[in-house]
Image (cartoon, rainbow, N blue to C red; front, side):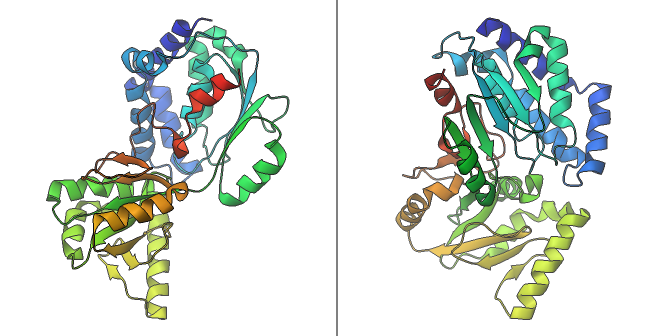
Length: 337
């Protein structure tokens, strides 16, 4: 197959996903029973984010500087399942580049990846021989694996001898200056609450100026109070709240989100940590020191930082070239063709 044929196949896939045919609607409704975190709204949000990138213009621009290749090499993919279809970008990179793929999906996937790949085969039968879903990876040339810090150590042990990308835990942060409008703070709510904060692009920490009135932030995110309608999120909120109360830990509470001052970046579910700052230069310095632990930064100011920078409300909608952990997946593949 040529690169253009592969592009055409993914364009048609994007069009199909955006239309959400009846069988996809059924899969979406079933997914929330298999994985309660995969609510209908969150699955549809993930599907829309994918389909919006699968246009001919975007795909051609993304692949413009890469050759038309049909590789004999196979890439082993170990996909995460923390949010719906989180591994799709890796699948796209591998297949559209002309490589073959052996794909190990997460047990949390709820059948979504299988559905998408089945429809891709129907759209372009010539792609069927280029990928398979497997229970165990073997007979591959390269590997891209995503997991926790613990599983990453196993990945390093088992796959370290092959060309690889191994991703670990990362979190995202936001910077508030105090000049934000209510609309901007509401947009920031999406960076925090979309996918219940389970993604590596979910904001888990705020940097706020000293003296900032937290009530302004809480007013801005008030529309997300329906998050507590989800029982698993509420269980986490109630648990963390009780721990802070028992321990006498200072925190802010608006009834559905807890704010706690902490230097760490990775906060528990339903909690966002915060740090106060004197100057943005201090924040830049800290972010650059922690760059390996940060997926992206959300702010409405220009910053001199190593991490990817997004406007409020945009962290959960990465473009095709917004690569996880800042590692260009296409460069990795073509360097090992």
